[in-house]
Amino acid sequence: MDIFTEQIIKRKRSTTDIAISIGASLAVFILIFISFFFLLPMTMIPLIPIAVTAAAIYGGYWVITSRNLEFEYSVTNGDLTVDKIINKRRRKRLLSFDVKEAEEMGKYDPRRMEQRPVDQRIMATETETGEDAWYILARTPKYGRTMLVFNPNENVLDGIKAGMTRQMRINVFGRS
Image 1 (cartoon, rainbow, N blue to C red):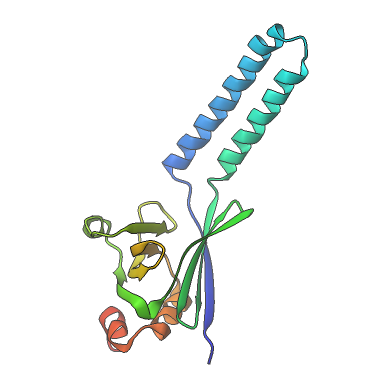
Image 2: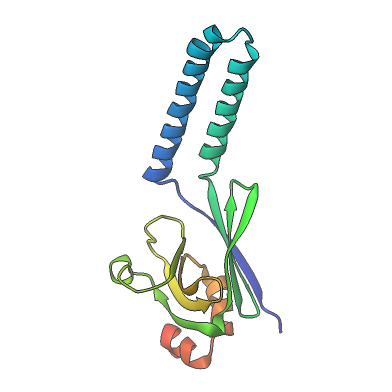
């Protein structure tokens, strides 16, 4: 029987996201101010300040909306794939591996897990701190020893559980 399950979670806006949005907005206003009060008197062609203004507004819009992140977890017959969706306009594959290759899995404790030696740490969670999250350690060809921190629902956990080795399933979920 084939197993397929997926989940999409939206990242909550953090103080970093708000600071980036405010900084981008200030940069846009400064560029507009410079283009109209310094470039316009220096050039005879009003098209240049208008083009700078349009580019600044578009760039600011792009930066601010790029902070709207979603993560998609999908489990297909034991293969876990995590994609990052940026403002519903672009998708980027973060990680894909067979859960049979996982070394360790459990509830994520930020204080304890920050000290773990890994080559790559991927935070695909609702919050930047990884509250109420799970972690899974695996070796991937692209990143080496990788720690994925994510917020799976019960369906995704069941899909992962079905793809794990028996010993790993007992270590993580107990005898059930």
